[in-house]
Length: 237
Image (cartoon, rainbow, N blue to C red):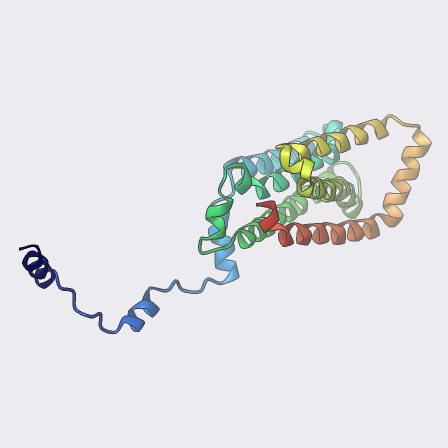
């Protein structure tokens, strides 16, 4: 009786052999996505707080320059390290929320996602620099290049050190290790402003003469540290 029942069920629910199976599989394969389209898709996954902090920084620079507040020119370089930390913390968001394994098996690899975030946030920072540096320089009688250098040096230094900290065994355990780096650099900059006037003038002269070269070197080191971070994504995860 059991055998007859099994035979009846097999006949009733018999599934024919699939036709054009290979063509069907080809049709359901995901289409290739270009790098620009991928970047546009990943923009939606950048946290709102990142954009809010960036807009707040721009608003502070523009309003302070328009009102001729002397603190604006002094505070902007001090705030740059914290703007760099925003980028670094965004790159470790997958690990923080336990999404690394999921993102490593999805359509875009974890390495691709972090690479996209680096590019998006890098372009966003360039836009911030392009908007704020000329306005601040014009408002306070400075040179645009020198003002941009003053903004870039603390930003790049924070990026370099923070990326190294995030890859270290200690940095992986500390959730906000890079924030401590930014705070230390910001406090150091405030401390430098209280030094002897001759030393401050000497520093300003170095920035004026060698600032552009220093920025190029720091930018190259930053790219190298980002490449090292991407290379060790699986270990980081």
